Image (cartoon, rainbow, N blue to C red; front, side, top):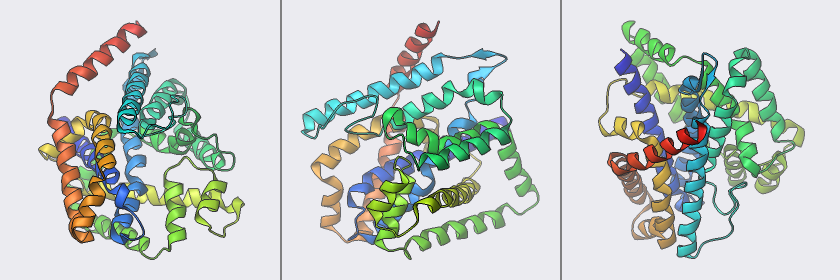
Length: 353
């Protein structure tokens, strides 16, 4: 059962990291002229990072246990954040797309924000461990809603930390075995297939709803999904005629939709090992860390746009999604990155000693 549970969560992470790569490869061609592609990217961005952060929280419990705190863990994430951000900026310098360098704000490229946010979450784990889950979750939601009214901006990726904190806490306070246990009970009662059909229909409905929104509505959602914009920026960018004071309610509605979509995705993920998908989840960090270097180079060459120029949108979408899946799996099966991560982890442990 333990191995099956771990395989399930590796599958979840595998699906999510593939979606991260798909979203980045499709983003250059997710324009108003490519309606289907734009909706696919919006749909991915709806839930993939909140669910990824939920999964991160799910396995952060060992950071603080029996009164002992592993300071090496946040040091490890901060080191990776610095290396990833700096490496990407060096690549941009060679590509001629360099804009600015600021580790504190991730200026000129912010893909590495997740590692800084994860370090911040992990640093606060001892504090979270002393709070009642209901109090912590309620407080985090209040903070997230209020963040939009006075946005702290990109400094130390504070806005994203505040907005995504509820998802990390949900993962932190939930026992992973209880999720797998629920799936097992659904299977024992013979209703797992029906639940998965219902989950698929809900996700299809959410995807279809994106097609009912106009361009202003889609800009509104995209700005809301990225979690780094103030409510004022979201409204001015989209041109939506919504009262500033009502925006907190939209963030709450967004949270509700994300929770529903994430639960549906988790229901659909198989519990058994899925070969290369499981491998991608097991090695999700190296896929996350190294795929931006490929993505930046391809984007500089106009790869995605060239594919769409050579064929109809549907065919181009299929090709780019297939390429993204192969890229994610290809990065996951590499063995040498593990030595790189082990070296950083070892250095972090020595620094913390």
